[in-house]
Length: 108
Image (cartoon, rainbow, N blue to C red):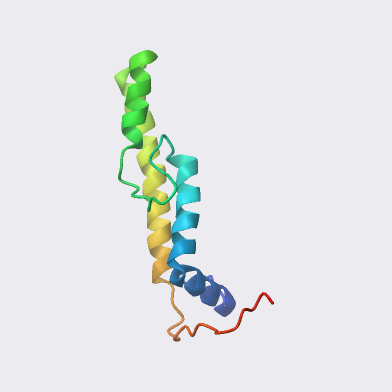
């Protein structure tokens, strides 16, 4: 991406290479849009899986017109889809350099 500097590209590559970190961050961000029991410990988020059913189940106890429910579901899908597209774009960012993991603990 032309709006990123070399350091930012390197940091994004490192982030994406750490699959546990990548999936943990994705889980936290998706949880803000896509909760309702689908994002859980040990679960790799699938953004196309059923937040809509939770919205529909709420409508049975609190009558919401179908068109309003549909608007909410469409909005939820748009948000989740935008996040998934963003994560896919992150995975495509590369400097073209090989990432070499350090055998040293840089935190020490």
